[in-house]
Image 1 (cartoon, helix red, strand yellow):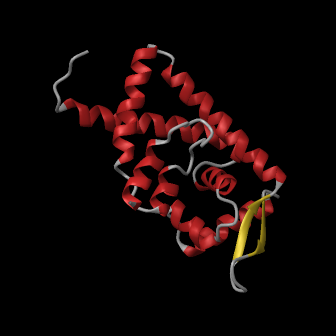
Image 2 (cartoon, one colour):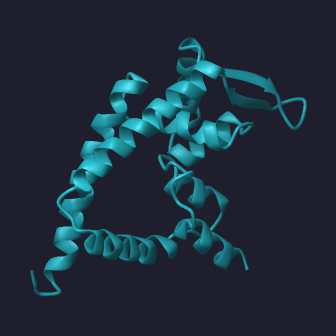
Length: 172
């Protein structure tokens, strides 16, 4: 299909909405909620020991929003607070149940995204991976933007993550 170049931004926007909607719906089941709860599980699985403040910044939450999210995760039995880097900070760590919940979120995400790619040929999937990698590589400026962009990624699936490569390039 050859479309005029000016159609590409509109199609990208529609695709982004479709992918986002399907991903949010898929991860809502295992997390029991959409949005920040599922994202927090995945972030904390991959980055244990961060603070509630850091988690809130990565997820785009206010300080009260982050505190409420941490209380919800603790209430579910998915999170525990431990001593942090200094006497005032508390490090966040998933419990074994929290780690399992994060794994369920990632499995649900993978299943819905895999189904979305079924109509594509292997060649088209490779082209999509190349295009997505090129776009994503340029978006990371610092550690937080890396964590924010990859907050629902299954890091075991990207052998050579273009987002991390972009971060390394930006960091010098």
